[in-house]
Length: 153
Image (cartoon, rainbow, N blue to C red; front, side, top):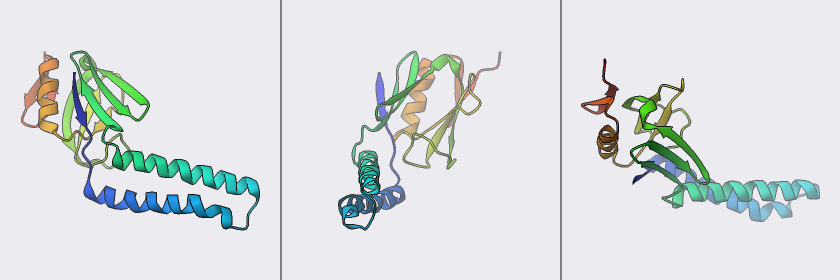
C-alpha cells in the first residue's frame, strides 16, 4: 500500500494560520466578556475545537492522506475514512475545481466513479506517481498523458 499526503497551497496556509491564532485568542479571552455563563462556555468550546481542527489541518501532515492498494483508493481525513473500489473508477484527470474536498490545494485530481454522480477531488503531492500507480492497479483504465480514461470495449 502506498500513502500520498495532500499537497498544501501556501496561500491557504497563509489564511489558516492567522485564523487559528485568532480562534486561540478568542478561546482564552471570551471569559472576560459580559455574557451569560452558558454563552461563555459555548464560545470557549466552539472556538477551542475550531482552533484545534485548523491546527491539525495545517500542522499535521497525516491529517489528510490518500492510500492506494490493488483493491481500494482510501481517502482519510482525520478520523474519517472513505474507500473507493479501484474497479469503480472510470476516469482521473487534473482540475483546479474549488469545490469543497479533502484537499489542501487547488492543484487537484478529479476521480470519476461509476457509482457516484460527484466522484472525489484529491490533491496528492506527487500527482504523476499517484496516477501511474493507480494505472498499474486498474487494467480497465488507460494512461493518456496526465489522465486515466476507461478503455472502450
